Length: 449
Image 1 (cartoon, rainbow, N blue to C red):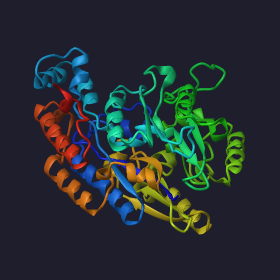
Image 2 (cartoon, helix red, strand yellow):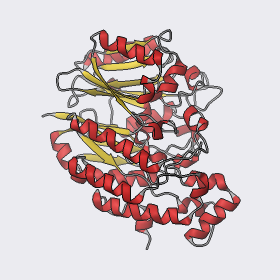
Image 3 (cartoon, rainbow, N blue to C red):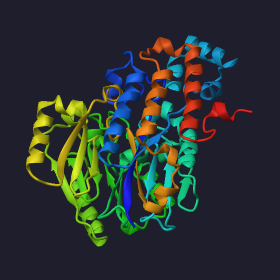
Image 4 (spheres, one colour):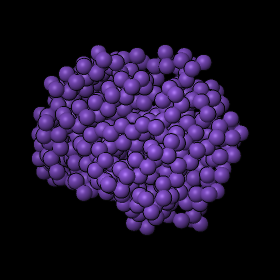
């Protein structure tokens, strides 16, 4: 049976803004307080989805969250009508209002960890929503994320959904941004690589000293157990603490993999040689052959990798078996990175095509092409069981573009977040979106009695 890797990209939400909320994310912090353009951000994301769909890749859409999160503000003691809650938060605790308005759910690489049916004990596709508890604004996401995923993958015969792990530091889970699956073919058993930044219980392991390590070993192990993965099908690897301290807050900022290919920076992992050996051995036992593309620091520094988001790219399998690398415009603007990519193509290895996309609105907040997508490997039967309204085609693309034009503002600042009308605009947009994508009542305002 044929199998596919389907990319479900996050739609940018109507409250897309630059709040500078993500300590450890250099781009997020450096662009804090600048004016954003939600309409342009949504267009840019949709343009990438449409271009990849036109190239023959199966492409899906994942809905944004309700923002501002009024329920979260009420839990923090703000009272009155929804408009009064917003006004009081703006007056007394503007940082909390900014956090409650974050459109960070657009980066759906953090939405969940996904294991395909070929890897799991019960032969179903497993989803575990990420708790994202390292950052307050992201920790608000997982309840709605779970409802949206269940509305998209709603057949229990094929799909299993797990709630987020306990929301404590010991089980900090950042989802698929620290998870990569390797396989000879998408429909066959593979090896899942879980990358963590620190251990919660083993003080012997090194940890970063400047920025927080968001993913714990214990969280990765728990997800592997929940998904019914065998020991022969998993590898746990520690991210290099030194690169976390240089702004590599997730593994997908320093490495990306697909199929039998791992494209990574020389400094991405701690104990790289041992990790690559284990990955190669386990993949070989499942019929695969690891092809590791090691980018030397002499060619691309960690600073260049973080500034250009070279590794926060999409690595996609083409029909002829070669691969397409999807990179942001910032890669072309960096002479060292662009020079390296030219050399990579000239080598005649697995990467045979590079596509460049303008994603500046997302990039300024610290998210590139890989941040914007959740990868789900599905066989033909499973793909047929997915909610068809979330699979992108020409008609859905045109509908979503029109939806964005009618509902999104073209400029947003911190001051605009205090406008109660923004909440009404956002809810109106999302209510219509749930009908377009046939999601049902997934948002809190739709579920209130």
